[in-house]
Length: 358
Image (cartoon, rainbow, N blue to C red; front, top):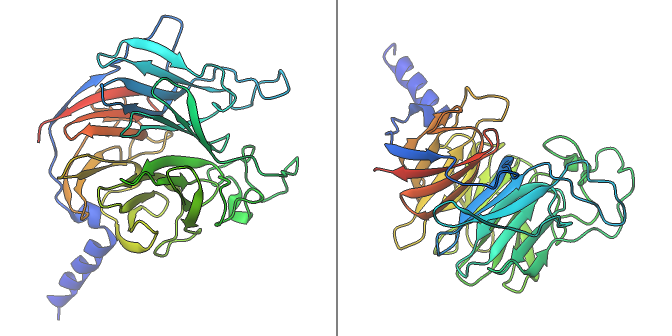
């Protein structure tokens, strides 16, 4: 009986702390910190998103504090503004896209689709915008609700809501329910091979919204909670070659996996607090997930996990900190190549270019 007690205790601890119990191998890697060359009068702020196109050009959506003038008034938005920069494959500045755009308030993510279209997720305008490779608008997902009480009633979210949950736990934006194309602080976007669009909606809401390739709303799934198919905060989203949808449910410290119609399949709880997700292209796909520490705490988390799509961990690399090869709240990962990554950091306000040596 005395021998049985330690065995039972070890079993309980293993189930409760799977990430800590694993002996996860370290993946050696090199880093080029700050690989981008900017003009003298332009600076990067918090990196909402970083992504590369098929030519290797790099796009950075950054929170710069650059004033954005709101519609119909000369008063800047309280959140300042965000800017979208393009660099060539060597990191040389090419241009700024959409300067002073009304839709660029709070940079959350940038993604590049297989056709080299540029997709921007802006958390505070509640928009997901598709631009062609030349930077011309092609599609807008999300819309302003028909009526927003000003000031918003206590417990409602929206662009003016404060706090990580945006107050939407008590109702959110009018019209921003589960069967709606109205977002409340979206965080990410992804596509399947048929061109269907999946939006992580995200902070104010707790759901995934699905649209067809024309931008027509199809359905959504998820609600606030910690059960299967429920979310705390949806931070990132990715889709594999079979159309399965991977969702970073960071508040609940797990990655949930769904089929293409939103039916829950499984969950992975062995990668810390997932904040950024990326799935590599090609027949042998891998999932990268950042265990991102909060901006105010550099002493926890910080590493990035490399995983197989079945949830098994191949290895991890990096740690929390400010030096090269250390990370401060990774919000974006570009993994167009399996062993050559771009990582965007909020707390360190930089992009790192990583080369893995598995």
